[in-house]
Amino acid sequence: MKEKLTVIKVGGKIVEEETSLHKLLQAFSAIEGHKVLVHGGGRSATHIATRLGIESHMVNGRRITDDAMLEVVTMVYGGLVNKHIVASLQATGINALGLTGADMNLIRSHKRPVKDVDYGFVGDVETVDGTALSTLIRAGVVPVMAPLTHDGKGQILNTNADTIAGETAKALAGDFDVTLIYCFEKKGVLRNAEDDDSVISHLNETEFRQYVADGTIQGGMIPKLENAFQAIHAGVNKVVITVATAIDGASGTIIER
Amino acid sequence: MKEKLTVIKVGGKIVEEETSLHKLLQAFSAIEGHKVLVHGGGRSATHIATRLGIESHMVNGRRITDDAMLEVVTMVYGGLVNKHIVASLQATGINALGLTGADMNLIRSHKRPVKDVDYGFVGDVETVDGTALSTLIRAGVVPVMAPLTHDGKGQILNTNADTIAGETAKALAGDFDVTLIYCFEKKGVLRNAEDDDSVISHLNETEFRQYVADGTIQGGMIPKLENAFQAIHAGVNKVVITVATAIDGASGTIIER
Image 1 (spheres, chains in turn cyan, blue):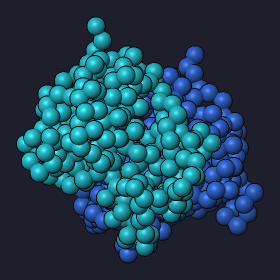
Image 2 (cartoon, chains in turn red, yellow):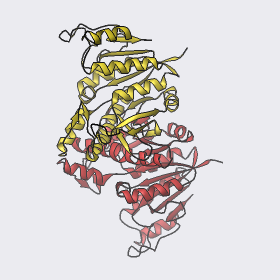
Image 3 (cartoon, rainbow over the protein chains, first blue to last red):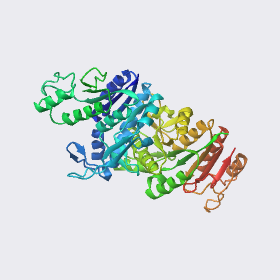
Image 4 (cartoon, rainbow over the protein chains, first blue to last red):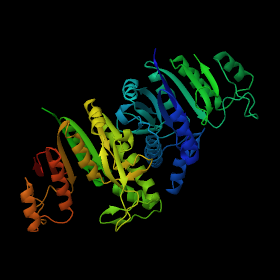
């Protein structure tokens, strides 16, 4: 039987405020078995960029990453946010190791081709080195992954944290019994957008298609769930969509193989 | 016989300019055996701090690190400079891994006690986990170390890169045949400050004391060399003081056991 591993993706908002970060780290510490934390940091990046006189441009919720913005996200995601989480986890006795995709060549990507929009230095993931990550994890290390990858030619690329979490979970599914947890601001996928307690507790792909067809599930939740089912098809055991304070793997919306 | 390992410390100036960084990485790639790169980044930190409206205060060449400056050095050393080097090394086929002392609890320090000067969030190194570093190095990883450590209670501390290089070299001396190379702007320790070619090629402790007594060696070079002899006493095989373009271990001023 494979050992359990939980990959948790948390957005910037949670790790950027001391109170919510503290709660998250407590909940994260309580998770049994191996674990990986993937974090965002967009709000801090926007904040630092503004202070540096650099404007943030977003298209479809994605950041346009020019030279100046790449410097900002490299500093903020790889340095400020990542190292703060690592030092905080070390204080709770968790052997955290901060990583970008460039470190140990863990996540190779290519610059997103320009179609309608030029996203700039944004990476689309090609490969995750699951073997190298597995070795670290089995040695007791807890990877803390910043949303940065590289192209192998010296270029760092800004990369969506949801994608990093999903691709990492898939790459580790051969070696571990993987649960992938996506944290966001709601308790789960809601049956009724107006009612925060109307969480759909379990979801299979047929139900998902029905909910999309009847308009219950819409907007940004559709690609999130498409990714979730993709991860399941690629060998991930369970995907959970939940709020950051309930990451026990039993709360929120659960998708199982 | 122990395997060879070279620990190289380079200042911010070299890694912050593309031309000199490129030359350094070429020279670094050419070094045989295991290796570790320790970098500074003070000029970039000052530059970013200025752009953020944060003043840099230096006392005896050391940076006073208040809350705002700690954020800057965490971003710049741990993110901007470190990840740029890592991605550049990966492009040359070197399996670089960017690290701070918080990562894997590698370097524990305590906040420098306030005596005449309050340096703020500056760390004095207590312990380096040589075993964890050795394991990574033997697995083919090349650590790229930023001048940041932690106190184990969640606090990141700004830490002198020379000290990190020296303490890392000592911690690895039990497992490897260690050469410690300090790069600076001159070709080595000079017999005559006015003559850049008057490099003292070999130096033992008796000669060092004489050179200090007769005024040949003075200023900031004295603590640098005190550290070098300390490293030798602690088991480091060779310390070299040289210019960043000549890091073959044979150029510059050489101190041997």
